[in-house]
Image (cartoon, rainbow, N blue to C red; front, side, top):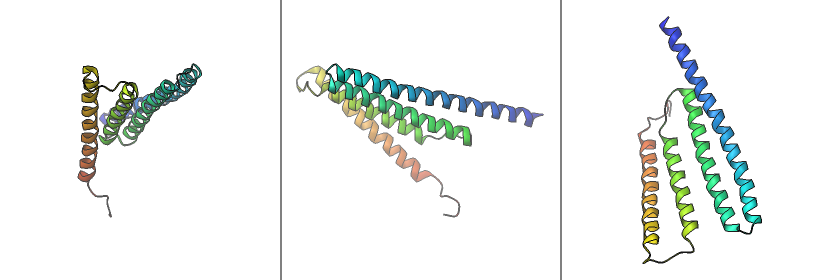
Length: 150
C-alpha cells in the first residue's frame, strides 16, 4: 500500500513538473512574439536603439525561461535537482542587467555624477557575480564523479 501511495505521489509530481514546463514554454513563446512586435513598433516610431535594447532584454529573458524549462524537464525526468542550470540562469540575468544598464547609460558619461558612479558600482558588482557564478559552475564540474566506464 505504501508503494502505491509513493508511486501515486511521484506520478503527481511528474505531471506537475510537466504542466509547469508547458506553461513556461507558452510564456517564453508569447514573450518572444510580443518582444518582436513591440520592438518593430518602437523602431517605426523612430527609436531604433530603444527597440533593439528592448528586444535584447526580452530575448535574454526568454533564454532564462528556456534554461528553467530545461531544468524543469530534467527534474521531471530524473527526479533530482541540479544546481548548474540555476547558476546559468543567474549568469544570464546578470548579463541581461549589465547590457540594459550599459545601453541606458551610454549617452550619460560623467565620472563626477553620483548617478553614473552608482551605475559603475552596480556594473562592477554584476561583473563580480558573473565571475563567481562561472567559478561555481567550474567547481561543480570538477566535483562531478567520473562517468562509468570512463
